Image (cartoon, rainbow, N blue to C red):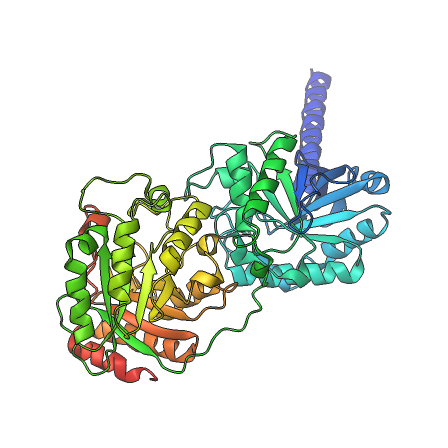
Length: 560
């Protein structure tokens, strides 16, 4: 009986030991090792804006992943060394902190040198290869989700970390080709690290990370996805590797690439012109005079001595009925310059136009455009004509929102060039809100004199506490950075803050500091009214109105 019990005990101990050993093996494999493994991703094409005949890779390229863990003690190379000896390889590097720690910023840890050992190890592997090696680092960075720990981080942190990784790897292995690898999601170029740090760009068709994000409508076909993703990279003068993800097939039909090549060639002179490849290096214009204005339909602020500009919003119907001309004449008679925000909707037929952009280009609204241009060109006073604003916001408040960027660009250009364009006194204003993907809708230098953005303290309509509003400088810096590929002067045609007067005064005082410190801001126009209640649903629309005393104090703080 004792022997039987002893046998059972030994068996139990042996089982526990085996299970523990296996568990420790998995623990060491998944937690204490850097892992190199072959991935399911494939390169299905190359799109080179400088060589449209280059469609497929010259040689097959096998894809590997390199998962770097901050806690790793050693590495498992798998079959990577064999692959490097036999063919061209693309290695996607991922940097991870301890476990699933999303509270720390992995990008800052990279620049602190926390992954230097792994970078050296990777460089040693790559240096032994006699074939071409591409290294893609922390991809899908722009997708607003938390699939990877480097997402939902600031562009500045990502760019700094990318530079650190690229410079260090190139120092060890100059022949390595560094890939900047966004998914191709709206806002990707915010994370562009610049030509010096990048050899290739890449996009992913059917990225699992992107499929988990729902801020923007997802394309329904591979053709749409390809066209939109490549369009978003039009400021990037690098060959683009087209990669497959879970939602795409391993083969991309030649017909799709040929169609994209034809589409690109069709708009090569303007939308896809080489003039766009500026790498954020242009010199920004510097103001000589600051224009201070108000949107003030209740006429509470317009007579203040510091005000030189008034803002008018209008639409087709107001122009057709003559209402706009009356309002415009009133501003001219007060000897003020005018911002005219033309919203192409609500004509006198009162029939919603569901294909507004197409109707504009087909000439349906030519008579009203002609009438508008006649009115605003009949004076020597400077008029700032803002057309189809806030187009990049993925909502349907306006008929020109959530539209294809190229269609928007063509409609914008049609309007601004109609009949030779408006008079010389009219300045053409391109007016995004300044949100993600703004530059996707950039219509071209020749039809823009000023860029306009909107700055409101309230970041979310569910926030009711005025103290939780963002500072003017925070919003300005974020939105202005998105315009870094463009060299036009900036006019803040709308801004506002809600709350008690003392809070508004503090917010406006700091806004004045930001405007004074940024000489590329040529004008600022306060929105002295409540917002449109229809846009806020069941929540009370914010009231941005300020007192004449607050406006006077703000104006006095500005450097004229």
